[in-house]
Image (cartoon, rainbow, N blue to C red):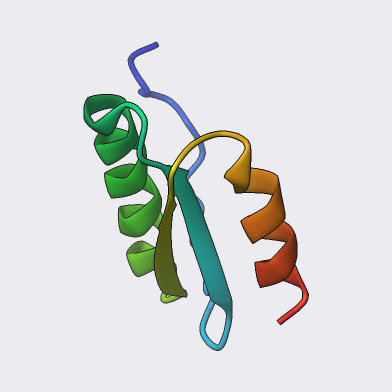
Length: 69
């Protein structure tokens, strides 16, 4: 996909908070995904907090805890 011809959308997430929960198991892959998530949040004026966990088993537990706060 070239990305060309896509719709021009503007997202204003001012006042929103997002937790980016990422595993530490494959740093090369995860760092790229985290960078994209952080950039998307910044472009939408969303406050983002990065939380790293050991692996995939911890992801849903930490995500659920974040959703409750």
